[in-house]
Length: 197
Length: 219
Image 1: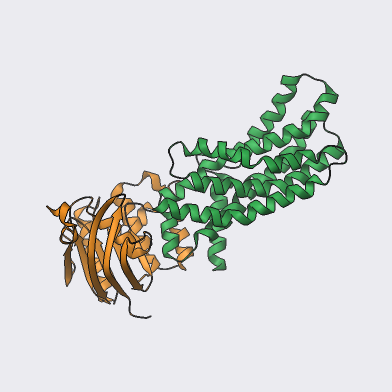
Image 2: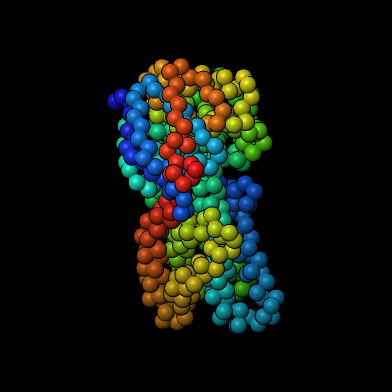
């Protein structure tokens, strides 16, 4: 597998007629983790979606090497299906991989329809989907939302293992996220002047 | 890649054919049969009138039945983030839409063609009319499926999108309807080929229009 990397150069993002951030550059190499911080609506999710190639950049360039996995507030699981079947769909798409279901505490929930799961359980299911994808780049948008203390620690541990294994993790979160060697980037530093004032 | 296509098709079929809350393929078929049952009540038991107009009624009922599942075709998957996850895995929107057209057609085309048999009995259609209606539906329903998925993708995320989708499909389905129902008149059999042609045009456009619409909805 080629070493993954992310190179963002002079990026600007616009939503509607508002520029959220500009002149943002960052480099991430294999094994590195970055936490993007900032208040609500500052563009954390937009930055992740631009890096993922799901949203256009207003200016600047993004170059990524390696497959990208994204966990955001949408779990991308069929709500009518039992969790086991909903995850099995992604296992078949991703070529059947180990989802660490037992570790995420999902084994007893496999027969429960996804729509009956709690927010935290859905988030854990989304993490299981991400693990199965085996993508070297992880983009985590508020990964700790809805997770209890135990699951939050587990999510941090999974991200740490992912980076130790040569992966990249970008975490957008207003909560602290403990990963060894974590870099921090405050998105407010890149807000246009009239907004910062 | 083929394995992924089969996986996508299987999921789409499970959702559209068996349905969950939406009722699956049973809903359009029951709707279609109720129209065929109500029509004789409304116009009276005049056998010649029923036989003469019944073919057209079947076409209108089929078109309206095809509109029923529109709101379940694309919007829920955009909403739940599935299209984003497919895009991240390099599965193009065009491909997903093409698979969905096939699944949508399988979930209402063949069932409606089967339901046409009892409907034709209710309306007292003769053998020639029944045959032409069936061939016409075979030629026309793929186009209606393509049109339905395209419009569902275009209206996904709009307020009142489902109602709007129904209104948009009807005028665009007019060519299929005119050629399909027109083939019923004596000497109008050439309309069947034109129905097929209209269908092919819609089928060719659907993946690209639908895929572009999904990407535009992402914003």
